[in-house]
Amino acid sequence: MATYVVAGAGIGATTLIGNPRRISAVSVQSSSQLALKFRRRTSKTFSPIYASVSASTAPVTKPNDLVATILSKVMQSDRGVLLAKDEHKSVAEVAQELQRFCVAEPVKCPLIFGEWDVVYCSNPTSPGGGYRSAFGRLFFKTNEMVQVVEAPDVVKNRVSFSLFGFLDGEVSLKGKLNVLDEKWIQVVFEPPELKVGGLDFQYGGESEVKLEITYIDEKIRLGKGSRGSLFVFQRRKP
Image (cartoon, rainbow, N blue to C red):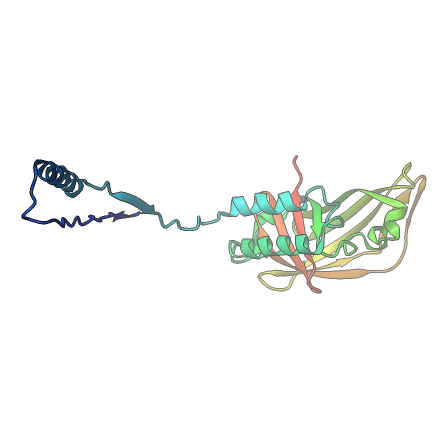
């Protein structure tokens, strides 16, 4: 902290003009009063004024703070559907900051395994496919969107929903995880399985996704798809 002292100074000048031949008791008395006032003015002191300037440095942001921030931005957003464009940008900025704290080879980190809730995607229709599209959401209300990663190389995606608000169902996919490099993985999924009411059947064909793991810890995992979509996964509590 730097401290500066600013002091004020200023003395008024008094000029006595008179005729030396006409000195009377009154003039002597007046002169004495003026001299007294002059002495009082010259003896007047000015209190110094102190101004303090503190140079504050920006605090170093910790990973835990960034994790709490990004979760607060995406929770209660229907996995990103309810966020405006500038809010998506804010989430991306925090994710970029977290990327600086990612472990060197996240695909080898044992924290990758476990059950994860998909709490955000910058492209809300990417996870869940047509069920999460603007048209699909008119009929299907998403209840849960879960990804399970099991050692050594199994990935299971599950989307549970309510059809028309009263008929429960789910879509699930099972895939094999392939490591491409220290950050990128590829998952090849079998045809999806649909369960709704008493029906249970598979449809469609195989599919694959590629995902870069940009951050991982005990609480969250961040991923970026091959087309640039940002995903936020939150570890499920046991």
